[in-house]
Every structure is written in C-alpha cells, then in structure tokens.
Image (tube, rainbow, N blue to C red):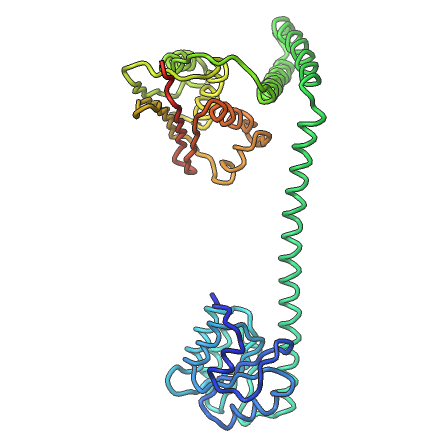
Length: 388
C-alpha cells in the first residue's frame, strides 16, 4: 500500500532541478548509469515530471510513497537488480506500465521480466523517437485504465446510494401506506381463508398433489399472519407492563417446543438460576420475543443438534443466554436482521429477530447476537431485575 506522500517532497529530497507539476504525468527512471538516466530526463522533462534514481532500492522507496504513471527500468544494476526491483514494485503497484532497458546478452533476465507485466523491452543504446512513442502510448493507456477504474468506483458508489434510497422508500411505504387499520383488515381476511383451508384439509383425502398444494398455502398464510401480527405489535406505543418470571416463561416454552415436530432432533441443555428472576415487561411480548429466538435456533439445526439455555443473576441484572450448534448467521445478515423491516428471503425470519430486538429494548434490556457460519449462534439478553 502506498503512503500518498506529496510528490513535491520527493522532488525536493532527490534534488531534482525541475519543479513538480501536478497537471503532468510522472515517469520514474531507475538506472545505475548516469548517462541513460540523464538522457531520459532531458528528453521528457518538458512534457512530464521525471524522477531519476540510481538504484532499485531508491526506486522502490519512491513507489512506496507516490503513484507514478510509467517506470523505465534498467535490468542490469549493482545491488538490487532489475528483476528483484520489478518484483518488489509489483507489490505496491500491480498496474503501472513498466518499460525495460536491456543490453545484449540479457535475454534470460528479459524472459523473467515478462512474468511481471512488462509492456516493452528496449535495447541500449535506445532509439529516442521509439522511446518517446512507447512512453506516450503507455501514458495514454494508464490514463484510460485509471479513468475507467475511477468511473467504475463512482458507479458502484452511486449504485450503493441508490439501493439505500430504495430501501428507505420501501420502509416509508411500509410505515405510511400500510396503516394498522389496513393490516387489521388483511389479517381478518387471512383468518377466514385459513379457516376454509383447514376445512378443505379435513375433506381431501386422496389427491396427494392437491394436499401438498393446500398444505403449502396454509403454511404461507400462517407466515403472512405472523408478519402482520408482528408489524402491528411494532406499531403499538402503549401496552400493559407487569412482573414477568423469566425462568417460568422459559420452562413453559421449552416444554412446548419439546413436543413440537420442529424440535424432534433437538436436545435442550437447561441451566436456570435457582432464585426467581423477575423483570418488568409485557408478558405476551416477552413470551413472543424469547420464542422467536428458540425458533430461530431450532430452524438452523438441519439434522441433530442442541440448544443450550442458561439464566443467571449478576448484581441487579438478569442474563439469559441461548446457544445452538446450527448453521449460523452471517455478519451481513446479523446487521440487517436488526432492521425491523428486513426479511431474510431464505427463511423470512428477519421480522422475528427484529421484533425480539425491539421488545427487549422497549423494556430496558440489551440484546446481542454472536454467530459463526457452520458452528452456531449465541443470543444474549440482559435485563434489569424488577425492584420488588
């Protein structure tokens, strides 16, 4: 990585007579012979910034500090030779055009140099018009490439900003257009449809495909009902706050889950604080928030696995930890899932975890998620204990 030093400082440090012009491209000349080095400086000094140095070591120091547009490099030098210098240069700048100066008998070195993206070889003594032509073309090429990179980065940045705006618009549409009254009406319709499908399931006994389709519809309607329910819960400003026994809530949930098909291959490791842990919250909200975590863990376990549950008292705080050895959640999804309106397209569980986050924070708690793909997820909840 380059240091982005001011090129004027480089000119001053090296005692270069000409002043650095930021509007001109820059050529770095690395040659231990003063004759070719000064000849190249004289040829290009009026059109370009020219930095002549007498060793590979000094050339690399320049490359570490500033970006140049073309490098003219001699292969045969004392100390660090051309190939070693070339290899080091590519660590700091993979794309800068490099022109190699080589004497007769340097063919083996020239072949090695080709592996480092050299654009041209010139024999010493070099032909001035030919060198000018090669340098000019290289300058134009690198200008186009860098402009292309700049435009690509700019386009990527604009796309990211545009995507962010679309996400904001979608959220506003969700909040503004789908009022709680509209959601209530949708929920009523879904309830009626769900009832009719349950009747159909009782009547249809033979058509396997029909059963499959109806079962799928039922599952989707349940999911839709859960989403609308959670959105309505998120919209509520006031609700009844009461004493909630954390251990009691967890025991009821675990007993319920042990009987469900979802947890038939899941073992529960439970370690609850011996004394009651009482917090202030809405019982239904807290129940749903913790259930969401258990469901997330259970769904992430593909074959056999475990869910570990632990509660403990720490001063005037209650700490609840839920761990699983499921497939885990990526960092990107963890960041997004805390957005109340994010829905994971694979599992549609974004609103569940977001609802949990909102509920915990509403009642003065703290919620953390740690996860590693392929190893599992840990949910940690901290609540102030009720002062009773």
